[in-house]
Image (tube, rainbow over all chains, first blue to last red; front, top):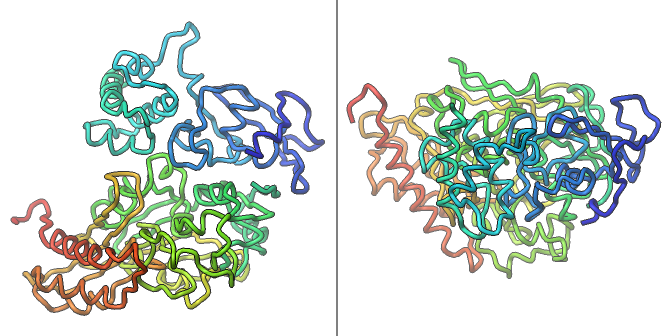
Length: 186
Length: 342
Protein backbone atom coordinates (compact mmCIF):
# COMPACT_ATOMS: atom_id res chain seq x y z
CA UNK A 1 0.00 0.00 0.00
CA UNK A 2 1.89 2.95 -1.31
CA UNK A 3 -0.16 5.57 0.46
CA UNK A 4 0.36 4.19 3.93
CA UNK A 5 4.11 3.85 3.37
CA UNK A 6 4.45 7.42 2.21
CA UNK A 7 4.52 8.56 5.78
CA UNK A 8 4.58 12.22 6.45
CA UNK A 9 3.14 11.05 9.67
CA UNK A 10 3.14 13.49 12.37
CA UNK A 11 0.65 15.27 14.41
CA UNK A 12 1.27 18.94 14.96
CA UNK A 13 4.21 19.41 12.58
CA UNK A 14 3.80 22.65 10.68
CA UNK A 15 3.11 21.84 7.06
CA UNK A 16 3.89 24.01 4.09
CA UNK A 17 3.47 27.70 4.52
CA UNK A 18 -0.12 28.34 3.66
CA UNK A 19 -2.98 30.34 4.98
CA UNK A 20 -5.11 28.51 7.49
CA UNK A 21 -7.79 26.45 5.79
CA UNK A 22 -6.12 26.59 2.38
CA UNK A 23 -4.94 23.47 0.66
CA UNK A 24 -1.22 24.00 0.35
CA UNK A 25 -0.60 21.35 -2.27
CA UNK A 26 0.96 22.89 -5.33
CA UNK A 27 2.08 19.89 -7.39
CA UNK A 28 1.58 16.13 -7.45
CA UNK A 29 3.67 14.57 -4.70
CA UNK A 30 3.62 17.57 -2.37
CA UNK A 31 2.29 16.80 1.08
CA UNK A 32 -0.84 18.58 2.16
CA UNK A 33 -1.84 20.01 5.45
CA UNK A 34 -5.01 18.25 6.43
CA UNK A 35 -7.13 18.94 9.49
CA UNK A 36 -9.36 16.12 10.65
CA UNK A 37 -11.89 16.25 13.44
CA UNK A 38 -11.69 12.81 15.02
CA UNK A 39 -13.84 11.88 18.00
CA UNK A 40 -14.26 15.54 18.87
CA UNK A 41 -10.58 16.44 18.65
CA UNK A 42 -9.07 18.51 15.87
CA UNK A 43 -5.94 16.88 14.41
CA UNK A 44 -3.49 18.70 12.13
CA UNK A 45 -1.63 16.36 9.83
CA UNK A 46 0.78 16.63 6.96
CA UNK A 47 -0.27 13.92 4.57
CA UNK A 48 0.45 12.59 1.15
CA UNK A 49 -2.57 13.47 -0.99
CA UNK A 50 -3.34 9.77 -1.51
CA UNK A 51 -3.88 8.99 2.16
CA UNK A 52 -7.38 7.78 2.92
CA UNK A 53 -9.24 8.45 6.16
CA UNK A 54 -8.55 4.82 7.05
CA UNK A 55 -4.78 5.22 6.69
CA UNK A 56 -4.83 8.60 8.40
CA UNK A 57 -6.55 7.02 11.39
CA UNK A 58 -4.42 3.91 11.60
CA UNK A 59 -0.97 4.99 10.40
CA UNK A 60 -0.90 8.65 11.35
CA UNK A 61 -3.17 8.99 14.37
CA UNK A 62 -2.48 5.45 15.62
CA UNK A 63 -6.18 4.80 16.07
CA UNK A 64 -6.00 1.17 15.00
CA UNK A 65 -9.49 0.23 16.09
CA UNK A 66 -10.78 0.89 12.59
CA UNK A 67 -9.72 -2.10 10.53
CA UNK A 68 -8.38 -2.51 7.01
CA UNK A 69 -10.05 -5.54 5.49
CA UNK A 70 -10.24 -5.39 1.71
CA UNK A 71 -9.25 -1.73 1.23
CA UNK A 72 -11.59 -1.78 -1.79
CA UNK A 73 -14.93 -0.79 -0.33
CA UNK A 74 -16.28 -4.32 -0.28
CA UNK A 75 -16.08 -5.63 3.31
CA UNK A 76 -17.17 -2.84 5.66
CA UNK A 77 -14.39 -3.43 8.24
CA UNK A 78 -13.29 0.20 7.87
CA UNK A 79 -16.74 1.68 8.58
CA UNK A 80 -16.68 4.97 10.51
CA UNK A 81 -19.21 7.77 10.86
CA UNK A 82 -18.47 10.94 8.92
CA UNK A 83 -20.91 13.76 9.52
CA UNK A 84 -22.96 11.23 11.47
CA UNK A 85 -23.36 8.91 8.46
CA UNK A 86 -21.76 5.50 8.21
CA UNK A 87 -19.27 5.45 5.35
CA UNK A 88 -16.23 3.50 4.19
CA UNK A 89 -13.03 5.15 5.36
CA UNK A 90 -10.95 3.20 2.83
CA UNK A 91 -12.68 4.95 -0.09
CA UNK A 92 -12.61 8.41 1.46
CA UNK A 93 -9.60 10.63 0.93
CA UNK A 94 -8.46 12.33 4.13
CA UNK A 95 -8.23 15.60 2.22
CA UNK A 96 -11.88 15.28 1.27
CA UNK A 97 -13.03 14.56 4.84
CA UNK A 98 -11.91 17.87 6.28
CA UNK A 99 -14.52 19.95 8.05
CA UNK A 100 -16.74 17.02 9.00
CA UNK A 101 -16.77 15.18 12.32
CA UNK A 102 -15.31 11.67 12.12
CA UNK A 103 -16.41 9.16 14.75
CA UNK A 104 -14.50 5.93 15.26
CA UNK A 105 -14.81 2.97 17.60
CA UNK A 106 -12.32 4.64 19.99
CA UNK A 107 -14.77 7.45 20.61
CA UNK A 108 -17.69 5.32 21.75
CA UNK A 109 -16.90 4.46 25.35
CA UNK A 110 -17.44 7.09 28.03
CA UNK A 111 -14.55 8.77 29.83
CA UNK A 112 -14.91 6.32 32.71
CA UNK A 113 -14.67 3.39 30.32
CA UNK A 114 -18.38 2.63 30.23
CA UNK A 115 -19.07 0.85 27.00
CA UNK A 116 -21.59 2.08 24.45
CA UNK A 117 -24.75 -0.09 24.58
CA UNK A 118 -23.81 -1.55 21.20
CA UNK A 119 -20.33 -2.54 22.40
CA UNK A 120 -21.82 -4.16 25.50
CA UNK A 121 -24.44 -5.94 23.40
CA UNK A 122 -21.78 -7.48 21.13
CA UNK A 123 -20.11 -8.89 24.25
CA UNK A 124 -23.37 -10.05 25.83
CA UNK A 125 -24.63 -11.70 22.64
CA UNK A 126 -21.26 -13.13 21.58
CA UNK A 127 -21.47 -11.06 18.39
CA UNK A 128 -17.99 -11.88 17.17
CA UNK A 129 -15.43 -14.63 16.94
CA UNK A 130 -12.09 -13.41 15.57
CA UNK A 131 -13.16 -9.79 16.12
CA UNK A 132 -11.58 -8.31 13.03
CA UNK A 133 -14.82 -7.05 11.49
CA UNK A 134 -16.25 -6.02 14.86
CA UNK A 135 -15.36 -2.31 15.02
CA UNK A 136 -16.90 -1.84 11.58
CA UNK A 137 -19.91 -3.93 12.57
CA UNK A 138 -20.45 -1.85 15.70
CA UNK A 139 -20.13 1.53 13.97
CA UNK A 140 -22.45 0.32 11.20
CA UNK A 141 -24.90 -1.13 13.73
CA UNK A 142 -25.14 2.15 15.66
CA UNK A 143 -25.95 4.00 12.43
CA UNK A 144 -28.39 1.27 11.43
CA UNK A 145 -30.37 1.81 14.64
CA UNK A 146 -30.24 5.61 14.31
CA UNK A 147 -31.46 5.41 10.70
CA UNK A 148 -34.49 3.41 11.84
CA UNK A 149 -33.40 0.40 9.84
CA UNK A 150 -33.23 -2.01 12.77
CA UNK A 151 -36.94 -2.60 13.26
CA UNK A 152 -37.14 -6.21 12.10
CA UNK A 153 -34.62 -9.04 11.72
CA UNK A 154 -35.02 -8.83 7.95
CA UNK A 155 -34.33 -5.10 8.02
CA UNK A 156 -31.22 -5.59 10.15
CA UNK A 157 -29.93 -8.27 7.79
CA UNK A 158 -30.54 -6.08 4.74
CA UNK A 159 -29.12 -2.88 6.19
CA UNK A 160 -26.08 -4.59 7.72
CA UNK A 161 -25.20 -6.44 4.51
CA UNK A 162 -22.31 -4.08 3.86
CA UNK A 163 -20.40 -5.56 6.82
CA UNK A 164 -19.01 -8.99 6.07
CA UNK A 165 -18.10 -11.43 8.84
CA UNK A 166 -16.00 -14.35 7.65
CA UNK A 167 -16.61 -16.14 10.97
CA UNK A 168 -20.32 -15.88 10.16
CA UNK A 169 -21.39 -14.52 13.54
CA UNK A 170 -24.38 -13.02 11.79
CA UNK A 171 -27.20 -14.41 14.00
CA UNK A 172 -25.43 -13.12 17.11
CA UNK A 173 -24.79 -9.74 15.49
CA UNK A 174 -28.51 -9.44 14.79
CA UNK A 175 -29.22 -10.37 18.42
CA UNK A 176 -26.73 -7.76 19.64
CA UNK A 177 -28.33 -5.04 17.54
CA UNK A 178 -31.76 -5.93 18.91
CA UNK A 179 -30.44 -5.73 22.47
CA UNK A 180 -28.73 -2.37 21.94
CA UNK A 181 -31.65 -0.96 19.96
CA UNK A 182 -33.84 -0.88 23.05
CA UNK A 183 -31.21 0.90 25.15
CA UNK A 184 -30.30 3.37 22.42
CA UNK A 185 -33.91 4.41 22.04
CA UNK A 186 -34.27 4.81 25.76
CA UNK B 1 -2.22 4.73 -6.39
CA UNK B 2 -0.46 7.35 -8.46
CA UNK B 3 -0.17 10.78 -7.08
CA UNK B 4 -2.29 13.70 -8.19
CA UNK B 5 -3.17 17.25 -7.28
CA UNK B 6 -6.23 17.74 -5.14
CA UNK B 7 -8.41 20.78 -5.63
CA UNK B 8 -11.68 21.70 -4.00
CA UNK B 9 -14.29 23.38 -6.13
CA UNK B 10 -15.99 26.17 -4.21
CA UNK B 11 -18.98 26.54 -6.53
CA UNK B 12 -20.46 25.15 -9.70
CA UNK B 13 -18.82 27.75 -11.98
CA UNK B 14 -15.50 27.14 -10.22
CA UNK B 15 -15.84 23.38 -10.69
CA UNK B 16 -16.66 23.78 -14.37
CA UNK B 17 -13.59 25.98 -14.81
CA UNK B 18 -11.31 23.59 -12.97
CA UNK B 19 -12.68 20.69 -14.94
CA UNK B 20 -11.78 21.76 -18.43
CA UNK B 21 -9.54 18.72 -18.80
CA UNK B 22 -12.08 16.10 -17.75
CA UNK B 23 -12.11 14.97 -21.35
CA UNK B 24 -14.83 14.24 -23.86
CA UNK B 25 -16.43 11.23 -22.23
CA UNK B 26 -13.13 9.34 -22.06
CA UNK B 27 -12.93 6.60 -19.46
CA UNK B 28 -9.52 7.66 -18.17
CA UNK B 29 -9.32 11.43 -18.41
CA UNK B 30 -6.40 13.38 -16.93
CA UNK B 31 -8.73 15.30 -14.63
CA UNK B 32 -11.51 13.62 -12.69
CA UNK B 33 -14.33 15.04 -10.61
CA UNK B 34 -14.64 13.50 -7.15
CA UNK B 35 -18.09 13.24 -5.58
CA UNK B 36 -18.80 10.21 -3.35
CA UNK B 37 -15.58 8.58 -4.52
CA UNK B 38 -16.90 5.03 -4.43
CA UNK B 39 -15.87 4.36 -8.02
CA UNK B 40 -13.04 6.82 -8.50
CA UNK B 41 -10.93 6.04 -5.42
CA UNK B 42 -11.48 2.31 -5.89
CA UNK B 43 -10.26 2.39 -9.50
CA UNK B 44 -7.37 4.73 -8.68
CA UNK B 45 -6.17 2.21 -6.10
CA UNK B 46 -6.36 -0.48 -8.78
CA UNK B 47 -4.34 1.72 -11.18
CA UNK B 48 -7.19 1.59 -13.67
CA UNK B 49 -7.97 5.30 -13.43
CA UNK B 50 -4.86 7.46 -13.30
CA UNK B 51 -5.88 11.12 -13.15
CA UNK B 52 -3.24 13.73 -12.42
CA UNK B 53 -5.89 16.12 -11.10
CA UNK B 54 -8.75 15.32 -8.76
CA UNK B 55 -11.38 18.01 -8.34
CA UNK B 56 -13.46 17.55 -5.20
CA UNK B 57 -17.09 18.54 -5.69
CA UNK B 58 -18.16 18.06 -2.08
CA UNK B 59 -19.02 21.73 -1.58
CA UNK B 60 -21.52 21.51 -4.43
CA UNK B 61 -23.68 19.09 -2.47
CA UNK B 62 -25.59 21.80 -0.67
CA UNK B 63 -27.87 23.41 -3.22
CA UNK B 64 -27.74 20.50 -5.65
CA UNK B 65 -29.14 17.73 -3.49
CA UNK B 66 -32.86 18.46 -3.27
CA UNK B 67 -35.53 15.96 -4.27
CA UNK B 68 -38.86 17.30 -5.46
CA UNK B 69 -42.00 15.47 -6.51
CA UNK B 70 -44.50 17.71 -8.26
CA UNK B 71 -47.19 17.57 -10.92
CA UNK B 72 -44.52 18.32 -13.50
CA UNK B 73 -42.64 15.21 -12.48
CA UNK B 74 -39.75 14.18 -10.29
CA UNK B 75 -36.56 16.18 -10.00
CA UNK B 76 -33.56 14.64 -8.29
CA UNK B 77 -30.58 16.83 -7.49
CA UNK B 78 -27.49 15.01 -8.75
CA UNK B 79 -25.69 15.53 -5.44
CA UNK B 80 -28.41 13.83 -3.41
CA UNK B 81 -27.06 10.58 -2.01
CA UNK B 82 -28.42 7.23 -3.06
CA UNK B 83 -29.62 6.68 0.51
CA UNK B 84 -31.60 9.91 0.71
CA UNK B 85 -33.41 9.27 -2.58
CA UNK B 86 -34.11 5.64 -1.63
CA UNK B 87 -36.13 6.64 1.44
CA UNK B 88 -37.81 9.77 0.06
CA UNK B 89 -41.53 9.43 0.70
CA UNK B 90 -42.61 11.06 -2.56
CA UNK B 91 -40.28 8.87 -4.60
CA UNK B 92 -41.45 5.75 -2.78
CA UNK B 93 -45.08 6.56 -3.48
CA UNK B 94 -45.06 7.96 -6.99
CA UNK B 95 -41.90 6.42 -8.50
CA UNK B 96 -41.35 3.15 -6.60
CA UNK B 97 -39.15 1.72 -9.37
CA UNK B 98 -36.62 4.47 -8.68
CA UNK B 99 -36.65 4.04 -4.90
CA UNK B 100 -36.31 0.28 -5.24
CA UNK B 101 -33.46 0.48 -7.74
CA UNK B 102 -31.55 2.49 -5.13
CA UNK B 103 -32.56 0.43 -2.08
CA UNK B 104 -31.40 -2.76 -3.78
CA UNK B 105 -28.04 -1.34 -4.85
CA UNK B 106 -24.71 -1.47 -3.01
CA UNK B 107 -24.59 -1.32 0.81
CA UNK B 108 -25.83 1.21 3.35
CA UNK B 109 -22.34 2.71 3.62
CA UNK B 110 -21.88 3.05 -0.13
CA UNK B 111 -25.38 4.52 -0.53
CA UNK B 112 -24.52 7.16 2.08
CA UNK B 113 -21.41 8.13 0.12
CA UNK B 114 -22.44 7.85 -3.51
CA UNK B 115 -24.27 10.70 -5.21
CA UNK B 116 -26.92 10.07 -7.84
CA UNK B 117 -24.81 11.82 -10.49
CA UNK B 118 -21.80 9.70 -9.68
CA UNK B 119 -23.90 6.56 -9.53
CA UNK B 120 -24.96 6.76 -13.17
CA UNK B 121 -21.31 7.25 -14.17
CA UNK B 122 -20.02 4.21 -12.27
CA UNK B 123 -17.67 2.00 -14.26
CA UNK B 124 -18.16 -1.58 -15.34
CA UNK B 125 -17.29 -4.43 -12.95
CA UNK B 126 -15.62 -6.36 -15.82
CA UNK B 127 -12.81 -8.22 -14.05
CA UNK B 128 -10.47 -7.73 -16.99
CA UNK B 129 -11.05 -4.00 -16.95
CA UNK B 130 -10.57 -3.78 -13.18
CA UNK B 131 -7.34 -5.80 -13.14
CA UNK B 132 -4.72 -3.73 -14.91
CA UNK B 133 -2.38 -6.72 -15.20
CA UNK B 134 -4.52 -7.95 -18.10
CA UNK B 135 -2.97 -6.39 -21.16
CA UNK B 136 -5.97 -6.74 -23.42
CA UNK B 137 -8.71 -4.28 -22.57
CA UNK B 138 -9.98 -1.90 -25.21
CA UNK B 139 -11.66 0.18 -22.54
CA UNK B 140 -8.40 0.75 -20.66
CA UNK B 141 -6.04 0.68 -23.63
CA UNK B 142 -7.73 1.33 -26.98
CA UNK B 143 -6.71 -1.23 -29.59
CA UNK B 144 -5.34 -3.77 -27.11
CA UNK B 145 -8.16 -6.30 -27.52
CA UNK B 146 -10.68 -7.81 -25.13
CA UNK B 147 -9.64 -10.54 -22.72
CA UNK B 148 -13.25 -11.19 -21.71
CA UNK B 149 -14.29 -12.50 -25.15
CA UNK B 150 -12.42 -15.77 -24.51
CA UNK B 151 -12.30 -15.39 -20.75
CA UNK B 152 -14.55 -16.00 -17.77
CA UNK B 153 -17.42 -13.89 -18.99
CA UNK B 154 -20.24 -15.09 -16.76
CA UNK B 155 -21.08 -11.52 -15.73
CA UNK B 156 -20.61 -9.94 -19.13
CA UNK B 157 -23.13 -8.22 -21.33
CA UNK B 158 -25.19 -9.79 -24.09
CA UNK B 159 -26.96 -6.69 -25.45
CA UNK B 160 -25.34 -3.75 -27.19
CA UNK B 161 -21.95 -5.48 -27.41
CA UNK B 162 -19.51 -6.04 -30.25
CA UNK B 163 -16.15 -7.80 -30.51
CA UNK B 164 -14.27 -4.85 -29.01
CA UNK B 165 -15.95 -5.05 -25.58
CA UNK B 166 -18.55 -7.13 -23.75
CA UNK B 167 -18.40 -5.27 -20.45
CA UNK B 168 -21.65 -4.76 -18.64
CA UNK B 169 -23.08 -1.56 -17.25
CA UNK B 170 -23.47 -2.53 -13.58
CA UNK B 171 -25.89 0.05 -12.19
CA UNK B 172 -29.54 -0.21 -11.18
CA UNK B 173 -30.74 3.40 -10.82
CA UNK B 174 -29.80 4.18 -14.44
CA UNK B 175 -31.94 1.29 -15.64
CA UNK B 176 -34.97 2.86 -13.95
CA UNK B 177 -34.09 6.30 -15.37
CA UNK B 178 -33.73 5.05 -18.92
CA UNK B 179 -37.06 3.22 -18.69
CA UNK B 180 -38.89 6.34 -17.47
CA UNK B 181 -37.58 8.72 -20.19
CA UNK B 182 -35.56 10.75 -17.70
CA UNK B 183 -33.66 13.87 -18.69
CA UNK B 184 -30.24 14.94 -17.46
CA UNK B 185 -29.49 18.54 -16.49
CA UNK B 186 -25.88 19.52 -17.10
CA UNK B 187 -23.72 22.50 -16.32
CA UNK B 188 -20.63 23.17 -18.37
CA UNK B 189 -18.25 25.79 -19.74
CA UNK B 190 -20.85 26.74 -22.35
CA UNK B 191 -23.66 27.01 -19.82
CA UNK B 192 -26.42 24.65 -18.83
CA UNK B 193 -28.01 22.15 -21.17
CA UNK B 194 -30.43 19.27 -20.95
CA UNK B 195 -30.18 15.91 -22.66
CA UNK B 196 -32.29 12.75 -22.66
CA UNK B 197 -30.84 10.24 -20.19
CA UNK B 198 -30.72 7.65 -22.94
CA UNK B 199 -28.10 9.71 -24.76
CA UNK B 200 -25.82 10.18 -21.72
CA UNK B 201 -24.08 6.83 -22.24
CA UNK B 202 -22.71 6.35 -25.74
CA UNK B 203 -23.50 3.18 -27.67
CA UNK B 204 -20.40 0.97 -27.88
CA UNK B 205 -19.77 1.45 -31.60
CA UNK B 206 -16.29 -0.14 -31.31
CA UNK B 207 -15.17 2.67 -28.99
CA UNK B 208 -15.32 1.31 -25.43
CA UNK B 209 -12.91 3.96 -24.16
CA UNK B 210 -15.54 6.64 -24.82
CA UNK B 211 -18.41 6.14 -22.38
CA UNK B 212 -20.47 9.29 -22.20
CA UNK B 213 -21.47 12.32 -24.21
CA UNK B 214 -20.39 14.67 -21.41
CA UNK B 215 -18.29 17.54 -22.70
CA UNK B 216 -15.11 18.68 -20.98
CA UNK B 217 -15.92 20.29 -17.65
CA UNK B 218 -19.57 19.25 -17.68
CA UNK B 219 -21.20 18.24 -14.43
CA UNK B 220 -24.53 16.52 -13.94
CA UNK B 221 -26.65 18.77 -11.74
CA UNK B 222 -30.02 16.99 -11.76
CA UNK B 223 -32.22 14.29 -13.24
CA UNK B 224 -35.82 14.93 -14.10
CA UNK B 225 -38.39 12.26 -14.68
CA UNK B 226 -41.61 13.15 -16.48
CA UNK B 227 -44.90 12.18 -14.85
CA UNK B 228 -47.00 9.42 -16.35
CA UNK B 229 -49.87 7.16 -15.48
CA UNK B 230 -47.34 4.28 -15.40
CA UNK B 231 -44.91 5.56 -12.75
CA UNK B 232 -46.96 4.52 -9.72
CA UNK B 233 -47.45 0.92 -10.83
CA UNK B 234 -43.75 0.29 -11.16
CA UNK B 235 -41.09 -1.91 -9.63
CA UNK B 236 -37.47 -2.95 -9.87
CA UNK B 237 -36.80 -6.68 -9.77
CA UNK B 238 -33.18 -7.67 -9.19
CA UNK B 239 -31.79 -11.20 -9.45
CA UNK B 240 -28.33 -11.78 -8.02
CA UNK B 241 -25.95 -14.35 -6.59
CA UNK B 242 -26.69 -13.36 -2.98
CA UNK B 243 -29.72 -11.75 -1.40
CA UNK B 244 -28.18 -8.36 -0.67
CA UNK B 245 -25.17 -6.18 -1.52
CA UNK B 246 -24.49 -7.60 -4.96
CA UNK B 247 -24.64 -6.44 -8.55
CA UNK B 248 -27.45 -7.74 -10.73
CA UNK B 249 -27.07 -10.89 -12.75
CA UNK B 250 -30.32 -9.76 -14.24
CA UNK B 251 -32.81 -7.04 -13.42
CA UNK B 252 -35.90 -5.40 -14.83
CA UNK B 253 -37.36 -1.94 -14.29
CA UNK B 254 -41.03 -2.04 -15.20
CA UNK B 255 -43.68 0.70 -15.15
CA UNK B 256 -47.22 -0.15 -16.22
CA UNK B 257 -50.40 1.69 -17.09
CA UNK B 258 -53.24 -0.79 -17.36
CA UNK B 259 -56.66 -0.34 -18.91
CA UNK B 260 -58.48 -3.20 -17.25
CA UNK B 261 -56.26 -6.16 -18.02
CA UNK B 262 -54.84 -4.52 -21.14
CA UNK B 263 -51.57 -2.62 -21.42
CA UNK B 264 -52.14 1.02 -22.25
CA UNK B 265 -48.55 2.00 -21.66
CA UNK B 266 -45.46 0.21 -20.45
CA UNK B 267 -41.85 1.23 -19.82
CA UNK B 268 -39.16 -1.41 -19.54
CA UNK B 269 -35.47 -1.24 -18.69
CA UNK B 270 -33.12 -4.22 -18.39
CA UNK B 271 -30.11 -4.42 -16.09
CA UNK B 272 -27.28 -6.92 -15.79
CA UNK B 273 -27.52 -7.59 -19.50
CA UNK B 274 -26.25 -4.70 -21.53
CA UNK B 275 -23.29 -2.53 -22.34
CA UNK B 276 -25.18 0.55 -21.23
CA UNK B 277 -28.44 1.30 -19.41
CA UNK B 278 -30.90 -0.59 -21.61
CA UNK B 279 -34.41 0.33 -22.71
CA UNK B 280 -36.32 -2.65 -24.07
CA UNK B 281 -38.32 -0.78 -26.71
CA UNK B 282 -39.14 -3.98 -28.65
CA UNK B 283 -40.75 -5.49 -25.58
CA UNK B 284 -42.74 -2.33 -24.93
CA UNK B 285 -44.07 -2.38 -28.50
CA UNK B 286 -44.93 -6.05 -28.28
CA UNK B 287 -46.99 -5.51 -25.13
CA UNK B 288 -48.75 -2.25 -25.85
CA UNK B 289 -52.46 -2.82 -26.47
CA UNK B 290 -52.22 -6.49 -25.44
CA UNK B 291 -53.73 -8.18 -22.42
CA UNK B 292 -51.00 -8.71 -19.82
CA UNK B 293 -51.03 -12.49 -19.66
CA UNK B 294 -48.04 -14.73 -19.05
CA UNK B 295 -48.04 -15.64 -22.74
CA UNK B 296 -47.91 -12.02 -23.87
CA UNK B 297 -45.25 -11.22 -21.29
CA UNK B 298 -43.16 -14.11 -22.62
CA UNK B 299 -43.53 -12.85 -26.18
CA UNK B 300 -42.43 -9.39 -25.11
CA UNK B 301 -39.44 -10.82 -23.24
CA UNK B 302 -38.46 -12.85 -26.30
CA UNK B 303 -38.55 -9.68 -28.39
CA UNK B 304 -36.32 -7.88 -25.86
CA UNK B 305 -33.63 -10.55 -26.11
CA UNK B 306 -33.72 -11.13 -29.85
CA UNK B 307 -30.43 -9.35 -30.49
CA UNK B 308 -28.60 -11.02 -27.56
CA UNK B 309 -25.09 -12.28 -28.25
CA UNK B 310 -23.51 -14.62 -25.71
CA UNK B 311 -19.90 -15.72 -25.24
CA UNK B 312 -19.88 -19.04 -23.38
CA UNK B 313 -20.05 -18.51 -19.65
CA UNK B 314 -22.92 -16.06 -20.10
CA UNK B 315 -25.01 -18.35 -22.30
CA UNK B 316 -27.49 -18.56 -19.41
CA UNK B 317 -28.26 -14.86 -19.54
CA UNK B 318 -30.95 -14.60 -22.24
CA UNK B 319 -33.17 -17.13 -20.48
CA UNK B 320 -32.58 -15.47 -17.10
CA UNK B 321 -33.40 -12.07 -18.60
CA UNK B 322 -36.62 -13.37 -20.14
CA UNK B 323 -37.77 -14.96 -16.90
CA UNK B 324 -36.83 -11.87 -14.91
CA UNK B 325 -38.86 -9.64 -17.19
CA UNK B 326 -41.91 -11.93 -17.24
CA UNK B 327 -41.89 -12.10 -13.45
CA UNK B 328 -41.47 -8.33 -13.13
CA UNK B 329 -44.35 -7.65 -15.51
CA UNK B 330 -46.74 -10.06 -13.78
CA UNK B 331 -45.69 -8.74 -10.38
CA UNK B 332 -46.34 -5.15 -11.50
CA UNK B 333 -49.75 -6.19 -12.82
CA UNK B 334 -50.70 -7.62 -9.43
CA UNK B 335 -49.76 -4.50 -7.43
CA UNK B 336 -52.73 -3.21 -5.47
CA UNK B 337 -52.95 0.28 -4.10
CA UNK B 338 -54.43 1.05 -0.73
CA UNK B 339 -58.09 1.91 -1.06
CA UNK B 340 -58.51 -0.32 -4.11
CA UNK B 341 -59.76 -3.85 -4.37
CA UNK B 342 -57.44 -6.43 -5.85
